[in-house]
Image (tube, rainbow, N blue to C red; front, side, top):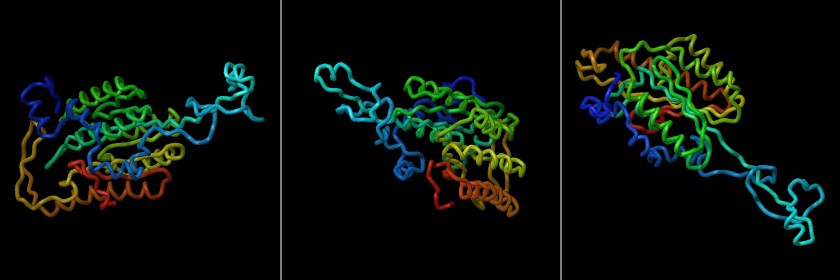
Length: 316
């Protein structure tokens, strides 16, 4: 559902309902929610506990100490001024900097617009991306956030600057607030993004894919996605963040319920056993596929979140 004026009454209702997010909500994600803290501490969202420097002395950018020259030291690191003053050779030693690079791929396609009791899947995806990105920026690591909409991919630029990250969040907000529920969604975009990452030869990066993985309904998509994830995981760490709405997992028997895409309205019979079985089967199909991928491929982990922004590890 596209919106024109973010200050219009209709837009405000969408924000208040949690269907869309605004800049204020994304900035608030600088402080991780309580549900995410165990994941940060356990390293499931990457080693995000401060900037790291290796203990091995090398030729990195971080100065470590001054020592007397020892045989085998690199003469390029001799501190000539100090050596002249002390009348003895001194060498500057450095700690090898271990920079981490974060790549976020956030799904903001049509299927992500769904939400029943809490935020929409699109809003949760945006907030999770913001939380991970904020942690990377706070520790001085470069972060890129690319967004998949219903019709195209908006590629982000890697940067560690606060100004650049705020612009990234502004772009994410704009895309989120212009999701068109009536647009014809492409089930090829996510796969195309991963192919582009392979073409760019990503190496040594923490890649987060945040989506409901709705394209996994097609068997040929499953095969292709598994091949791409396998290729990416050889040189990167991958986190697959699967977002679902509780109605996708368990449909309540509440009789006829109203549904809407913002333009059209209808009713569905939630007590229909065939409907309940079909929805549950679709949910389990995606979950089982992603679980199998994460358990068989190296450097791949699966994280499951519901639309209340709660980690649902018990489903794995």
